Image 1 (spheres, rainbow, N blue to C red):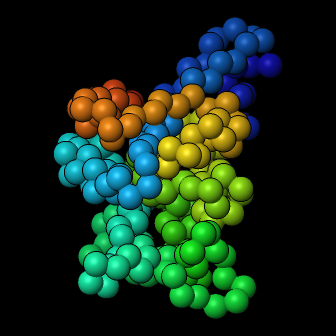
Image 2 (image 1 turned 180 degrees about the vertical axis):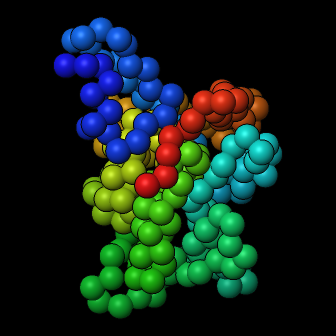
Image 3 (image 1 turned 45 degrees about the vertical axis):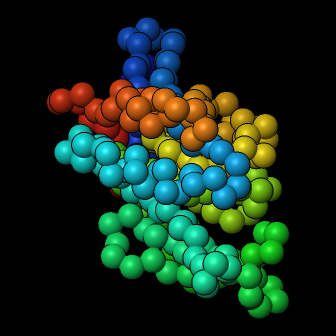
Length: 213
Protein backbone atom coordinates (compact mmCIF):
# COMPACT_ATOMS: atom_id res chain seq x y z
CA UNK A 1 0.00 0.00 0.00
CA UNK A 2 1.27 3.48 -0.84
CA UNK A 3 1.52 5.70 2.24
CA UNK A 4 -0.51 8.40 0.52
CA UNK A 5 -3.40 5.99 0.09
CA UNK A 6 -4.15 6.45 3.81
CA UNK A 7 -5.76 9.76 2.89
CA UNK A 8 -8.50 7.84 1.16
CA UNK A 9 -9.92 6.96 4.58
CA UNK A 10 -9.82 10.53 5.92
CA UNK A 11 -12.17 13.23 4.61
CA UNK A 12 -9.66 15.87 5.61
CA UNK A 13 -6.72 16.23 7.96
CA UNK A 14 -4.47 18.82 9.52
CA UNK A 15 -0.75 18.74 10.14
CA UNK A 16 -0.70 14.98 9.70
CA UNK A 17 2.58 13.33 8.67
CA UNK A 18 2.58 10.39 6.29
CA UNK A 19 5.83 8.45 6.09
CA UNK A 20 7.00 7.24 2.72
CA UNK A 21 7.35 3.66 3.95
CA UNK A 22 5.36 1.24 1.79
CA UNK A 23 3.82 -0.30 4.92
CA UNK A 24 3.60 2.41 7.58
CA UNK A 25 1.34 5.41 7.92
CA UNK A 26 1.43 7.65 10.97
CA UNK A 27 -1.22 10.25 11.69
CA UNK A 28 -0.48 13.01 14.19
CA UNK A 29 -3.61 14.00 16.10
CA UNK A 30 -4.28 17.59 17.07
CA UNK A 31 -4.51 18.08 20.81
CA UNK A 32 -7.96 18.82 22.24
CA UNK A 33 -7.79 21.71 24.71
CA UNK A 34 -9.96 21.47 27.82
CA UNK A 35 -10.92 24.47 29.94
CA UNK A 36 -12.25 23.37 33.31
CA UNK A 37 -13.39 24.65 36.66
CA UNK A 38 -16.25 24.25 39.14
CA UNK A 39 -19.87 25.02 38.24
CA UNK A 40 -20.57 28.78 38.15
CA UNK A 41 -16.86 29.61 38.44
CA UNK A 42 -16.72 31.98 35.47
CA UNK A 43 -15.56 29.57 32.75
CA UNK A 44 -17.64 31.21 30.01
CA UNK A 45 -16.47 34.70 30.90
CA UNK A 46 -12.88 33.47 31.04
CA UNK A 47 -13.22 31.80 27.66
CA UNK A 48 -14.67 34.98 26.17
CA UNK A 49 -11.51 36.75 27.27
CA UNK A 50 -9.36 34.04 25.69
CA UNK A 51 -11.16 34.40 22.35
CA UNK A 52 -10.83 38.18 22.50
CA UNK A 53 -7.08 37.77 23.04
CA UNK A 54 -6.49 35.64 19.95
CA UNK A 55 -4.76 36.93 16.85
CA UNK A 56 -7.63 36.32 14.45
CA UNK A 57 -5.36 36.76 11.44
CA UNK A 58 -3.73 33.48 12.50
CA UNK A 59 -6.46 31.66 14.43
CA UNK A 60 -9.89 31.11 12.93
CA UNK A 61 -12.59 30.32 15.48
CA UNK A 62 -16.00 28.66 15.21
CA UNK A 63 -18.46 27.45 17.82
CA UNK A 64 -20.39 28.97 20.68
CA UNK A 65 -20.41 30.21 24.25
CA UNK A 66 -23.21 29.66 26.77
CA UNK A 67 -23.55 32.80 28.91
CA UNK A 68 -25.76 32.68 32.00
CA UNK A 69 -29.11 34.48 31.95
CA UNK A 70 -30.52 36.16 35.05
CA UNK A 71 -33.83 37.70 36.07
CA UNK A 72 -32.73 40.09 38.74
CA UNK A 73 -30.35 38.03 40.87
CA UNK A 74 -32.00 34.71 39.94
CA UNK A 75 -30.32 32.39 37.43
CA UNK A 76 -32.97 31.20 34.95
CA UNK A 77 -30.82 29.47 32.34
CA UNK A 78 -28.24 29.91 29.61
CA UNK A 79 -28.19 31.37 26.11
CA UNK A 80 -26.44 30.12 22.98
CA UNK A 81 -24.02 32.77 21.73
CA UNK A 82 -22.71 31.58 18.36
CA UNK A 83 -19.36 33.18 17.59
CA UNK A 84 -19.68 35.75 14.84
CA UNK A 85 -23.37 36.46 15.48
CA UNK A 86 -24.72 39.58 17.12
CA UNK A 87 -27.53 38.12 19.23
CA UNK A 88 -27.69 35.01 21.42
CA UNK A 89 -30.73 32.72 21.49
CA UNK A 90 -32.30 30.80 24.40
CA UNK A 91 -30.52 27.50 25.02
CA UNK A 92 -31.30 26.17 28.50
CA UNK A 93 -34.16 27.25 30.74
CA UNK A 94 -35.68 26.05 33.99
CA UNK A 95 -39.07 25.92 32.34
CA UNK A 96 -39.72 23.54 29.50
CA UNK A 97 -42.05 21.08 27.85
CA UNK A 98 -42.47 17.31 28.24
CA UNK A 99 -40.18 15.47 25.86
CA UNK A 100 -37.45 18.12 25.79
CA UNK A 101 -33.95 16.97 26.67
CA UNK A 102 -33.19 17.86 30.25
CA UNK A 103 -30.15 18.03 32.52
CA UNK A 104 -30.66 18.72 36.21
CA UNK A 105 -33.14 21.58 36.61
CA UNK A 106 -32.68 22.77 33.00
CA UNK A 107 -34.54 22.01 29.79
CA UNK A 108 -32.74 22.34 26.45
CA UNK A 109 -34.75 24.58 24.14
CA UNK A 110 -35.17 22.48 20.96
CA UNK A 111 -34.43 25.39 18.57
CA UNK A 112 -31.31 26.33 20.54
CA UNK A 113 -30.12 22.73 20.66
CA UNK A 114 -30.56 22.33 16.90
CA UNK A 115 -28.65 25.55 16.37
CA UNK A 116 -25.80 24.36 18.60
CA UNK A 117 -25.57 21.03 16.80
CA UNK A 118 -25.66 22.68 13.38
CA UNK A 119 -23.02 25.20 14.43
CA UNK A 120 -20.67 22.35 15.30
CA UNK A 121 -21.33 20.43 12.08
CA UNK A 122 -20.92 23.54 9.91
CA UNK A 123 -17.75 24.77 11.61
CA UNK A 124 -14.83 25.24 9.24
CA UNK A 125 -12.25 22.46 9.21
CA UNK A 126 -9.44 24.98 9.60
CA UNK A 127 -10.95 26.66 12.66
CA UNK A 128 -10.48 26.13 16.37
CA UNK A 129 -13.87 24.72 17.41
CA UNK A 130 -15.12 26.19 20.70
CA UNK A 131 -17.86 24.29 22.55
CA UNK A 132 -19.22 25.66 25.82
CA UNK A 133 -19.88 23.21 27.35
CA UNK A 134 -19.40 19.45 27.45
CA UNK A 135 -21.34 18.45 30.55
CA UNK A 136 -23.03 15.38 32.06
CA UNK A 137 -25.55 15.25 29.21
CA UNK A 138 -22.76 15.00 26.60
CA UNK A 139 -20.79 12.51 28.68
CA UNK A 140 -23.91 10.35 28.51
CA UNK A 141 -24.08 10.76 24.72
CA UNK A 142 -26.81 13.40 24.60
CA UNK A 143 -26.93 17.14 23.99
CA UNK A 144 -24.38 18.16 21.36
CA UNK A 145 -22.23 15.05 21.69
CA UNK A 146 -23.23 13.32 18.44
CA UNK A 147 -22.20 16.18 16.11
CA UNK A 148 -19.14 16.92 18.23
CA UNK A 149 -18.00 13.30 18.01
CA UNK A 150 -18.51 13.40 14.24
CA UNK A 151 -16.35 16.51 13.87
CA UNK A 152 -13.63 15.30 16.24
CA UNK A 153 -13.37 12.04 14.30
CA UNK A 154 -11.15 14.07 11.97
CA UNK A 155 -7.73 13.77 13.66
CA UNK A 156 -6.69 17.20 12.48
CA UNK A 157 -9.63 19.10 13.97
CA UNK A 158 -8.71 21.45 16.76
CA UNK A 159 -11.11 21.79 19.65
CA UNK A 160 -11.42 23.93 22.77
CA UNK A 161 -14.02 22.42 25.06
CA UNK A 162 -15.40 23.75 28.33
CA UNK A 163 -15.76 20.81 30.72
CA UNK A 164 -16.89 21.09 34.31
CA UNK A 165 -14.49 19.54 36.82
CA UNK A 166 -16.91 16.76 37.80
CA UNK A 167 -16.90 15.43 34.20
CA UNK A 168 -13.14 15.27 33.68
CA UNK A 169 -12.71 11.69 34.85
CA UNK A 170 -15.21 10.37 32.29
CA UNK A 171 -13.95 12.53 29.42
CA UNK A 172 -11.03 10.40 28.10
CA UNK A 173 -13.34 7.51 27.25
CA UNK A 174 -15.54 9.87 25.26
CA UNK A 175 -12.57 11.31 23.37
CA UNK A 176 -11.60 7.83 22.23
CA UNK A 177 -7.88 8.20 22.75
CA UNK A 178 -7.50 11.72 21.33
CA UNK A 179 -4.67 13.58 23.09
CA UNK A 180 -5.84 16.45 25.28
CA UNK A 181 -4.54 19.08 27.68
CA UNK A 182 -6.45 20.46 30.66
CA UNK A 183 -6.35 24.10 31.76
CA UNK A 184 -8.06 25.10 35.02
CA UNK A 185 -9.30 28.64 35.45
CA UNK A 186 -8.26 28.35 39.08
CA UNK A 187 -4.59 28.36 38.04
CA UNK A 188 -3.05 31.86 37.85
CA UNK A 189 -1.18 31.08 34.63
CA UNK A 190 -4.18 29.50 32.87
CA UNK A 191 -4.85 32.40 30.48
CA UNK A 192 -1.29 32.75 29.22
CA UNK A 193 -0.79 28.99 29.03
CA UNK A 194 -3.96 28.45 27.03
CA UNK A 195 -3.24 31.30 24.62
CA UNK A 196 0.26 29.92 24.10
CA UNK A 197 -1.06 26.42 23.41
CA UNK A 198 -3.58 27.74 20.88
CA UNK A 199 -0.84 29.68 19.11
CA UNK A 200 1.33 26.54 18.95
CA UNK A 201 -1.43 24.80 17.02
CA UNK A 202 -1.89 27.58 14.48
CA UNK A 203 -0.95 26.60 10.92
CA UNK A 204 2.52 27.55 9.81
CA UNK A 205 2.66 29.90 6.82
CA UNK A 206 2.18 27.96 3.63
CA UNK A 207 0.81 24.83 5.32
CA UNK A 208 -2.87 23.89 5.11
CA UNK A 209 -4.84 23.53 8.34
CA UNK A 210 -7.37 21.16 6.84
CA UNK A 211 -9.86 21.74 4.09
CA UNK A 212 -13.53 22.46 3.94
CA UNK A 213 -15.90 20.03 2.38
